[in-house]
Image 1 (cartoon, rainbow, N blue to C red):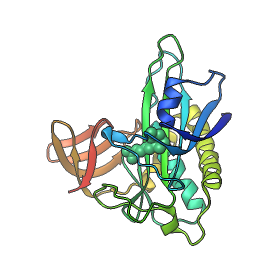
Image 2 (image 1 turned 90 degrees about the horizontal axis):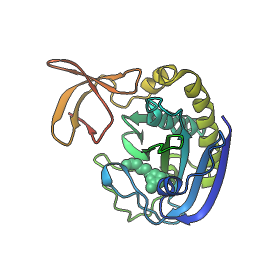
Image 3 (image 1 turned 60 degrees about the horizontal axis):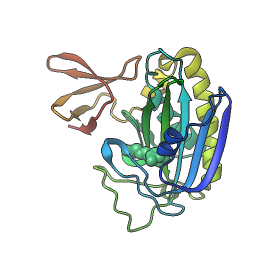
Image 4 (image 1 turned 120 degrees about the horizontal axis):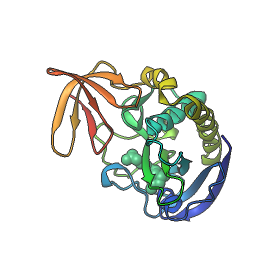
Length: 245
Ligand code: BTN
């Protein structure tokens, strides 16, 4: 899988830009990185806040065959790529919180926002947006149940944004290669090894209902498996969030 990379000093949101102005459909995975986003977005309508030098923010456009099902587990693959890049730098305690947060000892270091772009005559695509905290301002107020962290707190000599981007893209490229050939099942084991909630009692907070059970990993589509009192339930990554019960 060939990649193309464009870096800009500032934009509203790298996800929004790739969707509003899609790059040519030339078989490459197009990546857009921004030093600062003025309207960065997170999951569930949240804001991804931006301060100069505080985080690495970029998005990759993944095109898939017209008529094909939406690629399953894509956001889990992106989380795995971030985890492997961090591990390569010597960061310890990297875990993945389904569907797509990267945690270090329980605190959020990175978030991923996958958005679908309908085909409308073009090749359908998914935009995979990744934000990794590099050095948050001391007074940054970020609401996350178990707290947030940054790379500067994890490593004595953290890399700069460019060097980190190169590592994450190298991992993303290697994993996209496997994903394109064999789908999420080929990466499921690697994801589960880093599952922050493996075997733990968890609660899924959905828009309408909440569900409790033991986290039994993810299935071949990247759906969360929950052992509940009434049997095994599959949870698709929609507008849900996960908590330790
Ligand atoms: C989350 O934690 O809820 C997801 C955060 C995703 C943030 C990234 S930063 C690059 C890309 N552009 C955005 O506006 N959001 C994603």
